[in-house]
Length: 334
Ligand SMILES: *[C@@H]1O[C@H](CO)[C@@H](O)[C@H](O)[C@H]1NC(C)=O
Ligand SMILES: *[C@@H]1O[C@H](CO)[C@@H](O)[C@H](O)[C@H]1NC(C)=O
Ligand SMILES: *[C@@H]1O[C@H](CO)[C@@H](O)[C@H](O)[C@H]1NC(C)=O
Image 1 (tube, rainbow, N blue to C red):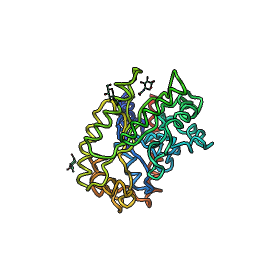
Image 2 (image 1 turned 90 degrees about the vertical axis):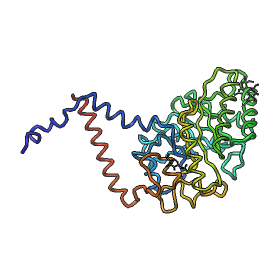
Image 3 (image 1 turned 120 degrees about the vertical axis):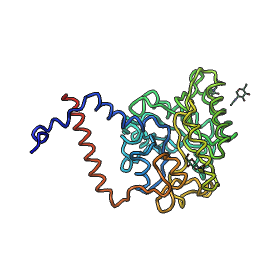
Image 4 (image 1 turned 90 degrees about the horizontal axis):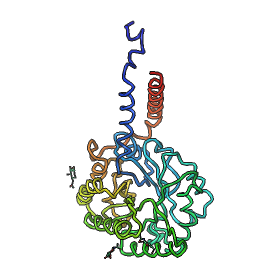
């Protein structure tokens, strides 16, 4: 029997400061990253690769108020609920579900592509109707009357087109017709972009001009790019666009978060975007775009842990929870 075994407390002789630093550093990395996950992937191994260490992704959403609690632990990626359209405002579930989300959820997205048709995932809402529903249903989440806390809310997210900008102008006018003083208050702006890098920079510039430079209120609204991709391109052209875009968005001060479309396998891509946008190949390996999105340390063809090893991973992560709890108890006792 060694000295250490006789005095196991020796192994915990590590300064309080160092322990705090380790605990903080491990969570800070993911939290400061702007990069996120727009999730419609049903393959557990893909989701696991995207959402567990060392993935740089910090947040996710899935166009609904329902978190993917079984696949993505709330302490790994921040979940951002969305009120997709008028339907969601009429469902008795929506408010309850958002109220029940963990405290790590702080931001709430509103209507998805109201200027787009329901056939392409849009919510097809007239600006006047959207303004009314926004003031009646979404704003109370901001004031804490709904959803159990003060949520940061976004204006509806339009398509990245002249139609989108027109829609937002009419929406703003309608808002002020209903509420002359406040219009439709918003805490952040959400944007979509499908196209080349140069077009993306122009669209974000336009939105920043509309909401910040030209707006009469002295606002400093940050933009979240909640869908972006370059449609109908080869794997190389797609990766090249991504290569230009990611460092640009990481540096752009008025962009707070972004998510690539999409986190699915090649076969699950829709006809409009084409296969090139997929982060995963059909066998579950990362595409070139997928490896680029996850960044250094990730390689094309890399796969997430298979569903078979799920039970073992559960035990490992339970072990981690116990270890971290033990650290916290020890820190408290030092
Ligand atoms: C902002 O104002 C300038 C000057 O009036 C105008 O030319 C421009 O179109 C406006 N931008 C937007 C996005 O409305
Ligand atoms: C919305 O309309 C109000 C009232 O006309 C105006 O003061 C404000 O600048 C507009 N906001 C934006 C983002 O255009
Ligand atoms: C994208 O960037 C990565 C890393 O910088 C590089 O290895 C890759 O060749 C680039 N791909 C394209 C298509 O530009």
